[in-house]
Length: 412
Image (cartoon, helix red, strand yellow):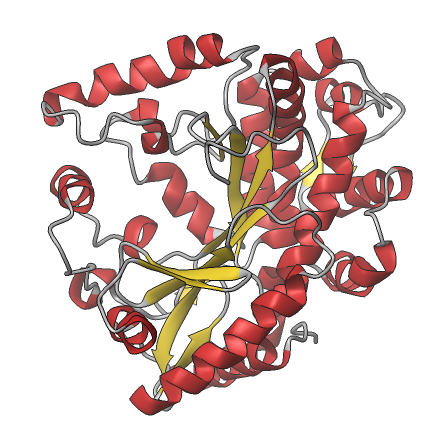
């Protein structure tokens, strides 16, 4: 969404999905995103428009991002758009004996020895990040996510959207966690990507905060309370101001005032585009209900304390759909004061029953699988059944690659 396109709430959607490029035989990472982009553009460009979508590079050379080429008016047809480009990319990668792998982290990549950063044209942003944070860690170079960009037209819409997003962020890993395996073993977290992400900027904690953003009411409020403290904290290490822009913010949802959107960043990449778009549709449905104050007032929503929301978020990052939620303040902010302690999946059932996604039939089957069988991270751990040998991991993740190629969910 560009700065020239100022859209109102829920009139446009920007979706970004990142995938790993891996070797077809070994499933090891294959750092050739530059060669892929060169093949279609004839140059080492960082982004190439491909009709409804655009393909772009990321920090690490084994990751390719697919994203809507401008705002999409609806979510319904996006799954097919992304799937068509997944198929095309897999065809192009076959020349390099490569293919795309889904999920949010490579299960055995060693980022300290295997990371290759984007090498083309001098990129002061990448160089500065790498100098300050050392981008070879899991939280920098071994992670793939899906982002949802949601527009707002003015401060009033920003206030309502930001308040609603704060409440939904803690629940998203219950549907979207897909990164339980790292360094060839179970990490103890179903969403190790977010656990690594949560800690990868600890040198300057103001950048990530509690992942859940603080309560704010306006653009000026946001700049004063979130952006300026972050810029001040990094300034001694970034005297030229290379990173002192709103995208430095690494909270789970960040305001992009340059394009009047809030970017939601806590969704792990799923097994297929149908699953990514279904989660996005569920999130949008819940957010619409909150923004319209159907079950709770804006004041009630904004009363939810950041630290308490962050505690719920950490639980869903660890336990996925089975995370136990028992915070009465959270239930009240959602307008569910009658709710007793329950699993995160139960809260999703209630949210989607009260506010089903538009054209629910398109996304319903995928959401049913997630709610009945658990998030992808839970399904991966169940499939591995305690066996983390390389052969067993390869069999599991090869099936995930096949799910991506065929646009079907990984089921057990």
